[in-house]
Image 1 (cartoon, rainbow, N blue to C red):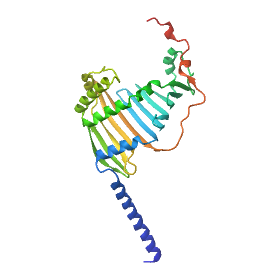
Image 2: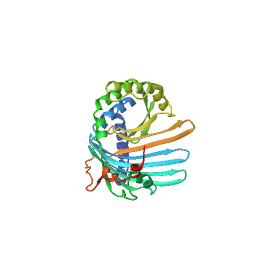
Image 3: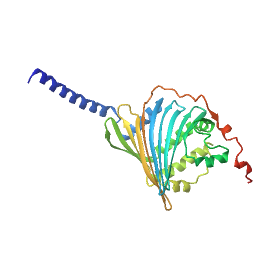
Image 4: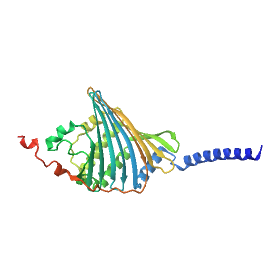
Length: 298
């Protein structure tokens, strides 16, 4: 063999050895059991300071087909966000699209309507909103109620711990896609009904919420689902969640709805800023115009 041929063969063998070694290394550094992988992922995701999401959601019913695309970035513990949303709707043969852009800060939210069907303004006019007056402008609204939910984080942790202790789900490893390990989380509906009932009781005892839902109502709701399970793709390199997907069928009387969701997460801990728009209108100023509701007698 010539020297040139020897070098070429050596390079090919070297690439193969390094590739096999890398795959072996990745398989060894990750958690060894599905339960350990899930626990490690949850711990690591809590330390993530920022990430991006691209999600595709669909809802299919007998005469309705809705597709929702969401892409955005999330930053910090308060989950400041900048997102774009696009919905395509086919409702009994009537097709239309809605496009929005949204920004959320600690106590303020902003939304910009890029496009909505003209017939939407028939409903908005009842609040005094004129045709086309919302197109392309930023609208500010308060997020005080959202912030209030964060104050109950300790109670939420107790609730999550209770769900884990009750073994409401099992997790199995499905396969591998490169550096991503795929897992399926499967909930036991009977155990989940009991656990959710206890969680609501716990929240009621802590005065977080008033108990307004009975166990029978919980059971009735959960039984609407044909199954409660979802798939996770966790990287063996960084033990972070890179994809989540689920699909299920909801059945109520003679109606059925098929729901699917698929989201990809990326750009973990990437540095970026989320700033409010310079020009905006407050929501109360937009809907303060006289409306048909003022003429209604209750």
